[in-house]
Amino acid sequence: MAASTAPLLIKRYASRRLYNTETSDYVTLEDIAAFIREGREVKIVDLKSGDDLTRQYLLQIIAEHESRGENVLPLDVLTDLVRSYAGNAQSVVPQFLAASFEMLREGQSKLMENMSAIPNPMATMPGFEALQRQQQMFLKAMMGGWRGGASSHEPEDITAEAGTPSPDDKRDMAEIRRQLAELQKRVSKL
Image (cartoon, rainbow, N blue to C red; front, side):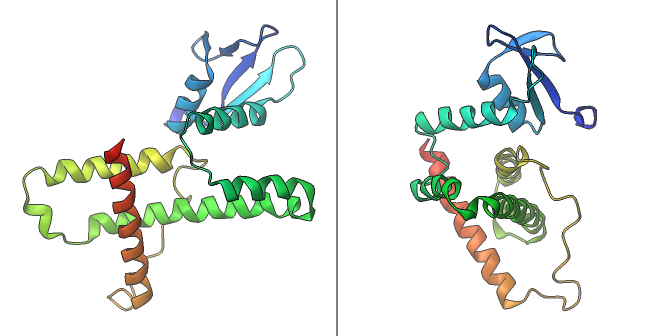
């Protein structure tokens, strides 16, 4: 999406309706969530005052998804977030969360790279390529909408010097595969 490097500007009118300045039509919170999942940055401003309302609306989108049972944030994480507003941790939490999501994006990028590099005996099975494409699209959909999509630099080739992965790398890949299998089971139940 080269044309979408600037944030999508959404204006909130006095009637609280949200107006997409690119398409000249009104949008809902669900539309805004879809833009974000597609990888777009959005900026929501109050038409009259010019105040940036983006944070308020993003929190509202998260709250609506959580209230519908689409629980992404475990209860203990929510509790810790509430606690962070009351203490000195408030200054540390944003940096920690940003670093955590950056590591997640980098891990997703490495996973995608490793999935295509590992020879798989199932590759000869009919329909395997379609399944693999679906998995990759799923991972991109899950991770791509997060700010930055993928890391801004190419992941290091951890096997370049030695030629084979280290035991830690093998354990990491095994854990990633286990988590991916769990995620696939959950998705298939939906």
